Length: 306
Image (cartoon, rainbow, N blue to C red; front, side, top):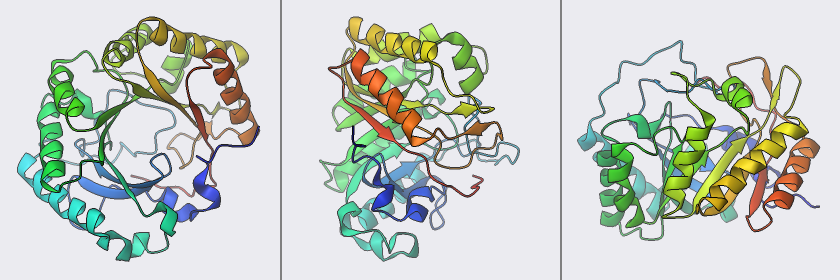
């Protein structure tokens, strides 16, 4: 089977794809990046600049040994930064900046505003207020076709702040990209290293609950740990989790299968070769044939400490 077009590295500068620095101009929270998943520009929102996260994922590239004393998020500042970034993106001025100057015409499209960053955005009690700021900024810029994407590790999908945010998302072309990196509790603990301890069953339950009201994107990152990739039993358990979501009334718009594309902090985590990721994608397509599956391949990324 030919590799899907989601492997955009052949047509786009690998440097542009790898450059996910969460710093743009003098902004504290907003950072435009070229996203291979979005196949265009994504305006990121980092409401976890203190680098606190309830996961310690083995593949994470964020250096949490260098804390930032930015625990409070000023929503007025966030709104002002979004206004600047959305204007630059929608007006095309962003492509004049050195970081984006070599991006080819096919990728010069503004796809989304994405909550992602140095921690889990939905864990913040004021998460819904930040989503409202993004929705109002998008509306003021007349960007109805631009999505608001929540990239989440799926730990807080049952939370009050998420319940308050869902109506805002649903009214603002919103989409949830939910992390599911494992099929077994053992792999979940090894890969995501939750803190405090959590059950994978609760993660799946949370995804199922939100997916009953809207189709979600499942994001999964498979990789080698100390030279060993996920075996057949793990992949079978993973596809069983996907079926559990579907059998529970959840809607899955897309499954994104990734491997490591930027150097992680842990030396034990390494990208899967393309053929291994292809074999996993084939197994997932066979197990859930009615769900779209895309694979995103690794790159020879240089270390990038965020």
